[in-house]
Length: 408
Image (cartoon, rainbow, N blue to C red; front, top):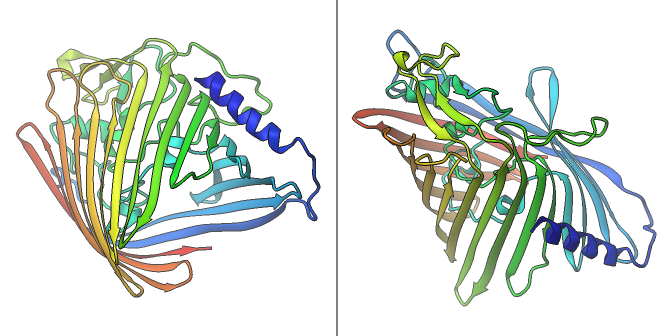
């Protein structure tokens, strides 16, 4: 599969370069990005002797640098870099890649999301920053004591005290227990090559190959090590999406599949008391052995006039053998009138926690409104109620978000 993908992308790009052509101007850099800022009011279950603020500010900001040019032979050449700047005085590179496009499709090369995410179909939402495909703001606090935690399991994962077997892998999938969204992004922005076809009669396909899932930029570090405990490599995505308009209505539908290969066997444990060691006497327990990671999604939405309804499903085994799969359903709808868009969504997630353990059941209801007050500028407000259950344990939270998004 990887040889076919790399070969196809190289052939497509090579055909575009058969007849070299100069552009009137070289690549010129432009700046863009976004600011997403919210006031949050939260009422959530809290641990004994632990207080969580009821009012606070949440934000997410990125700065994007993009430059491209189109050659006389029709080949578009560009580069794109995204910097996250909600890190105090510093910047962190989120994505950085080159791209080539033409009538034959598009090739992305570098640190960018894979085809399964780029072509994924999202359900309508109340506020896509909170209940959309990818969650950018989270009002509830899962990281202080047992706040919104259940039976020590949520507390353990929320405090990042998950411990792996020796030697420990470089990264963990367990932190995704508290990402209550449904983006299929198994490889994140690890370096990869992606090919996206042109749109044919509403259909577009894509495929990605990622040599090493956990790698950062390695310009002067040589190639990655192989056969590392708990690390993943030779990952690939395939996806297909359809979008079409018919008499009085439109349809968007798609599906994607991802597979990442585990390099070396590793076992996964929960360190319930958070002391850094595995001790059955403290309630610590084994989840199982890590395996190759597989995920798939399917989604569809239908628009009729100003109304839009849709549903999406995502299944991720989180690479653990046995009962540890994460299954997520989302249903949503919205209605647009002038500058206003009213939306609702229902999020349902079942997270298995290993053979013999109770499951984490999550249900979330959200309603909201978005008002466009200028080009790339929106005010957003939403109300959400979330419930988590593990066995007989039950915790709840309610949030109100009021904020703005400014794209630049």
